[in-house]
Length: 394
Ligand code: ADP
Image (cartoon, rainbow, N blue to C red):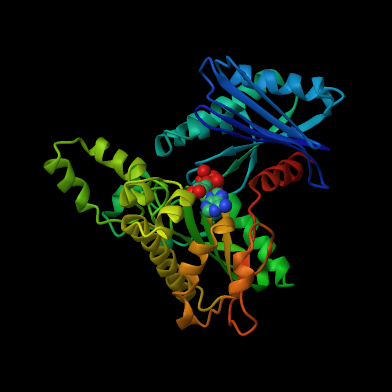
């Protein structure tokens, strides 16, 4: 069974075509700069790569181009071979605690929670609509970033604010990256030789966006992102947790609207804000290794925030079996892993410094004497999307 896994952003469309249940990737790629004259279409298949720069005005055009390429490049004999489509949807609010088959009602519900994710849900919907038009007879599934965290108890998801903010407006912690946290925690249980119901896991998903998750017996019990992805640890351009009074203070001092200040917390803070150099971990480590003090502060601040969350989740879980590192930085930046892990000695964690230097592959990076296993697990959200599409459409 061939399944498409789709992640549509406001000007991009990431795709993977998978053979299921073997989970073999037949093709993958991304269309970027949708809406512009010089959009870029990239596709990888077998050991080949194709790149085209051309005008791609809408997501619909991008989808049509992708589908005709799949046939033209002989990746598919015909489009009829695509039996299911899985779409990543960022926000499912409280309505969705699992993936669902997309119906008109589901589309309406996704649209209704757009208020909570104005940058993401409308873009996700554009991708869904484009495929619906191009392949009207193929069933599609929505896979929500928030769904995995719907198992949190009120003690974790409620903020200590007037209660009717929650009842009137849905102000609560939702959490994001759920598909990645779930995938990594399943792999972690597998690596420990146990069932997911038998283990307590902490996952650190550290990419451009970053969040931690405490997982008890396969269920998310707490996570560091909140009502929006701005909360939690410092990220590429997001501040993570700050005192909310700063927003009003800066708004007055700099004569900026609340929207402008929040925009700076989303787009000009984190690595970029502290280093005044870059939002990219590679740039910061290059500068930090040359002694750039602001870059050192930026990477150390993030590492401290990650370690602090791990400490809190170790207590919330009442101990844990494994701490996992995933996503762009978690998988590749050994320096950041080292900074974080060196702060965790008090809970009996010991790093194998040699293993930590290696990149990429799934493996154990803790020393034998470590009381908690440290695992490096490359995330794979596309596989989770395809698995859910198969599970629901079968
Ligand atoms: P997102 O999906 O949230 O956009 P990614 O998971 O792709 O983000 O992570 C992007 C981050 O990973 C960037 O900060 C990038 O510098 C970092 N990264 C990728 N490869 C490496 C590497 N080899 N060494 C250090 N950092 C890396």
